Image (cartoon, rainbow, N blue to C red; front, side):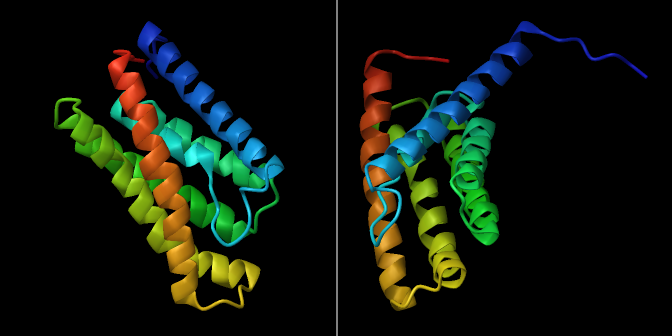
Length: 171
């Protein structure tokens, strides 16, 4: 059995992923305290972190772990924990895959937020309706989840990404 060498890169990757996961959890608790985490239109500020996938591949595991931990610690339904984590992973992975092939431009920063928006807007409404027994129609839940993701992931995510790009920030 061959020993795996611990490299500077693997330590950096683990550290960056852990920091993103921790930030995701902290922002989730902040949203909960401000009353933004629950309700018809949920403004989930940690979803803005999806844009970090444009800057580092370590954001994919960081976002996924952060979403899982936040949903688990905040007492979400089991199906919500699983589906929410899956939606976040899909969005983060596809956002990274889009950027990996392009130069980091303002347009690519914006485009990198779209998979998170789409994945959550498609996956979460049926989960929310089923897990929490929403009495509103499924179409209404699609609209409200989509609106929340548009604000959180696309608008705030793009603003965060453009700020990081302007500052020439790299992980």
